[in-house]
Image (cartoon, rainbow, N blue to C red; front, side, top):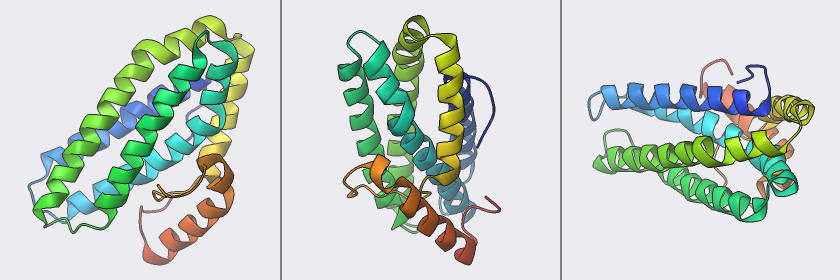
Length: 183
C-alpha cells in the first residue's frame, strides 16, 4: 500500500501490484471461490489508489501540466467508470457467469487507464513538475491511501470529500467481516 519514492514511482508500483492481482484472478478457474478473494483485494487497492490520485495527483496535473484540466478530467471519468463496475462486481457471487464478465471488464478498463497514465500523464507531470514536489506528492498519496475507503462508492458526490469518514467505516466493516486480509 505504501512503497516510497516520488508520486510516479508510488503509483507505478501500485499499477504493477494490481496487474499481478489481475493475473492471479485470471489464472483461477471460473466459479473458484478464491476469485472473490482476489477480486476483493484488487477492489481495495483500486479504490485506495483512485481516491489518492483524485486528492493529490490530478490537482497537481491541473496545476503543472499544460492542458492538465482535460487530462485530469479524462482520468477521473475513467475512475468513475471502473468504480461503477467494482460496485456491480461486489454484488455478484463468484459462481455467477456475470462475475467473470465483470472481472474482465474491470481488467480491460483498468489496463487501458494504466497504459494511458504511464504513457501520457506521468511523463507530462515529470517534465512539468519540480522533483521536490513529486516527492511531496508521493508522501501525500501514501498518507491518503492509508485513510481511503476500501469499497466502491460510485454515488458519492466527490471522492475527496468522503474519503476519511467513509474510509474509516469501510475499514471497520472489513475488520468485522475479515475482508481483504490483514490490511
